[in-house]
Image 1 (cartoon, rainbow, N blue to C red):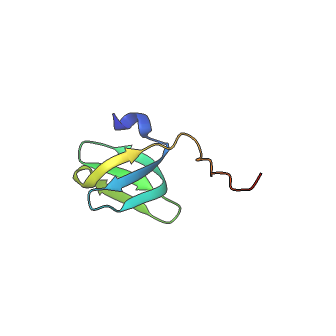
Image 2 (image 1 turned 30 degrees about the vertical axis):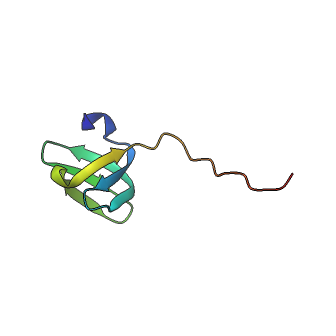
Length: 67
């Protein structure tokens, strides 16, 4: 399942509530994933990951103004 996300920019949410963002999923196997950002290379155990999100498009900010 994670093989489809390799090479894509993903957002990883951990069980403790923290997250890793602005990185690319480089490798994945049954025990660890390799996640690379501009500043660091992380080897993350699968057991510590809650979800992995793949952002598809930018969020539109609500328009504020008076008509």
